[in-house]
Amino acid sequence: MQAVARKVRAGCTNRRLWKILSFTIGGTVALCIGLLTSVYLATLHENDLWFSNIKV
Image (cartoon, rainbow, N blue to C red; front, side, top):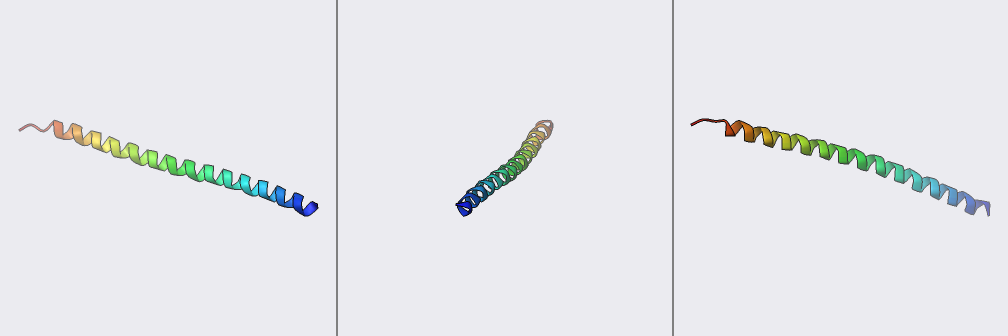
């Protein structure tokens, strides 16, 4: 009976650990991708402004 209780507790702890890890890693990856996307879009916008000011 105690072995089953230990396995249940270990399973809950293990599941909780994976939940925390996946949330942390997923959030970090999402923030990095968002930052890279914003820098890329800012660069595209700046290029559009730069080339629109060229006079022939």
